[in-house]
Length: 628
Ligand code: FEO
Ligand code: CA
Ligand code: CA
Ligand code: CA
Image (cartoon, rainbow, N blue to C red; front, side, top):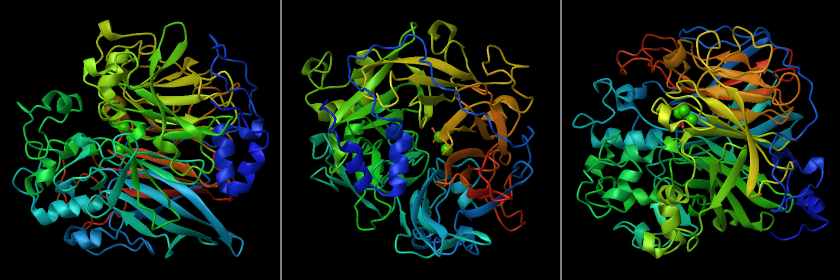
């Protein structure tokens, strides 16, 4: 890695906006000084000593429970900002959701919102403005259209082509402009307001797999462009002001039986087993693997786009690997190189890291060249990052790898061969703004047998999950080959579940289960959203806050409860920490339901409105900082 230019901080300050600087400072810890990032640094066998921070979450915890409403602590207010089918320019609802055409859906807020990112714009009349960037992860035809039976996501013969197009249009991403007013946040029209969708948006393929034979299809003989992004779960904000969108469960989009195909083993390694979750394969050849076996290779990537440039063509960055990407959490090393931590959210899959070859500054395509590595955790508290480099170790022609394109297209098999640690579904990742420690949610793994337990995954059939702590030797030493690791929280209800781990002082409401997305607020509190607690513990999902350092370390406190059946996702904050956005995804999904007979009426609670996923905007009634 190149040495650090002495004036790097000054260059960064000139180059990036204040918000970007906050991102840079927050993620890479530049504010805390220029620490060492050398790769030969000694790995701490124990967590390094770090200064304590004040424990100041001053809210009264929300109680456990389950109903069709959302709940915040006294003194807080939570309003529905925008939900499925609403206008992107003023937030108004559409009359009949089931009657939306694909064209209408292509310009309205999509369904099943997940990741959110608030990207500040220059204030107007002293009031904050910004873009809210939101993912739309999946569709459920039974809950979108009248007459489609519940639980018919496979849509074998019921859903029409027009409806499938509506489903694809409801996927992707929304960018809405927000303006703070004396009455609260309002959605306003703006030059950046737009949708990215699976139906219409054309993506460029970049990095090692671009143009490779395995990326070529009849619709794209060059292997360099693709229409569609799917499974857009979580994401990430880069220090240079772009947003990353993950492609997670892309296997659900492919029909056709792979049995007997030359690519069968490769397809099955990605669970492309001919069990499509939506009916696209019935109408579009490219989603049928018996017709276009290369098409799945064009999904499972991280997508980068620029919120403030509607003309920027979104790019699938193949150097970041191909798997069921939950999201990506980025920072810079001391020398300004970009680092992305990423989880493959499937049972027994892996945790990955990408380190760019070039510094991020002045390199808009910095995510196209670098080293992708996979994590191996050892019982002595060491995490080793194993590089996935063509030609090294087992990643050679003898094992079917002819180039780095093969390595990234078959990231999972490459990681298998390197001996990476199979994990319990790594999901959310967040980096502490000053300590630089990296926190990783492992949501659960009920399939892990006792014989498969290891130092990280000590509980067999773990239904409740845990949060790992990864410890670089310095706050910005994110390019080290080895790091330390610990377990911050082993989740579950301590009064009912075995081998939980929390800090001292946990209250009756403080325990959590099935951690998913993680975020640090500007003050350095960790916010933990959950997905699956209702099924595993009987309490609805929500959002918890805890410290990672000092006396309050690992003492989680419940801040939000979402409606029964919903998961809580995508927490993000304004830079002043006074506004919190969260997505409430799939309310009512605790039992089979349809558009006509929903299991939830959240958020409208009207007899003619179905349940809808929506974004909540949460503020303190006195205008103060959230959580304090
Ligand atoms: Fe879409 Fe891993 O959550
Ligand atoms: Ca989700
Ligand atoms: Ca998730
Ligand atoms: Ca999840």
